[in-house]
Length: 201
Image (cartoon, rainbow, N blue to C red; front, top):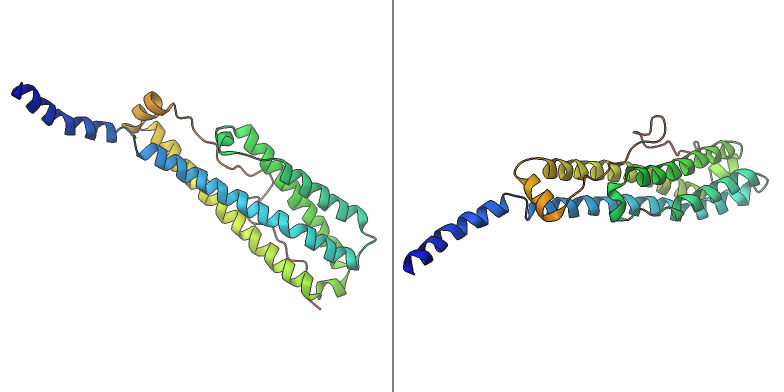
């Protein structure tokens, strides 16, 4: 009996080390990190969506006749905010692509709005408009950073679940699937879009 207890006492640490080296803790940690970074991406896109109604109203006050452009921005915003990607969707590249395409359409609509603004010097010097412009520009930069951080976290997670010894825990214990990275859907999408509406006059 004493010998059995001694063997158990000696094997227990070996078993614990073996299990810990199979990703028991590191896989969920990496997965949660990637999910948290995705939440940052969504947060920044939501910040952009929240700024747009005020921007549209400000432009409308100066350029009400540009109804088609204002409508296009409003509709693109509605579409972009209607596509929700949950953490369960992060293994679905098609779902992330739909999200990215909707966000890209909104970026393009904002580009059309920028063209309209050029024709209205009074608007370009309006204090409310300038404040919204600055906030939007800052948000576009935050979106770029959030997408970069999400992709880095996904890369770390995907590498972890595919390499030894964590692949054992990933397959046997968690049934882990690779997550999809956020892919660019527009030309030069690796750069934050220019949202400057011209210099104030």
